[in-house]
Length: 304
Image (spheres, rainbow, N blue to C red):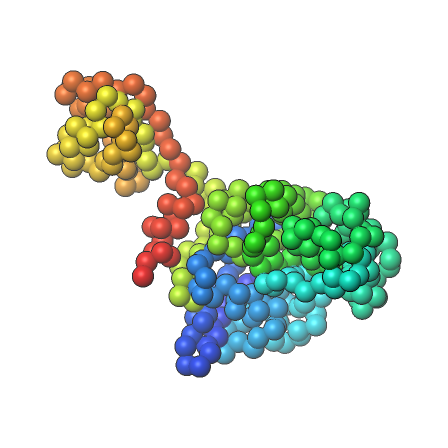
């Protein structure tokens, strides 16, 4: 069973499609990084998944339950925060959680459990007005964790945080599947942070899902080889004349770009032989895995 499955999900506003034909597949136990620039349709998709907006077309299934057929059952095992969660600044962290705990009919001990998960027990009795932004985001996450959801949807959880806050939230998200057994669906525009936590990524552009894949498979294989040598410009010219794609990194290094993973070793050997044969000293050869930023650019997400 998939934690989230959508088929052809679409939603328009004023004659313009904000989300068009999106088909998500989020496995149980995964951390799914939902990426895209501002205006790509990420938050609209989140709202559709939570039933906060009605889709114009398509289907949503959460934890195996059709959202349109039984909204209450579909959302029963789901926790979320979308955009900037609202909190009561004049109340303590514990009191904020108590409002939701009472509404859901949960035992009081549930508050202590979620405070422990997000590491806020030390500040539970303080007024939220005195919390840092990072602490407020963690409190909002604690609220979403009330009731032990099996699926957690987080919309830009590191938005506006300083580096320390980003690191704390990243570490927390990465640990959640193991600590509470939940599947995490997290939207973000911070590529490096998603690369550190996600097991699967989906890339949005112009309301469409342009890529959905296992991140280890995408980034695990080297497609670029770094050559440290004594004259990069000469090396690039030489390799280009052989029909190989090479790029200058700096005066003493170049990248050999390989069209496929299985061509890395033979092309690197060929390039090395040619460089040495031309009298260019090669000091080191290092295969470099693709980064998520490279994949993001190659997917066309950044295209105009």
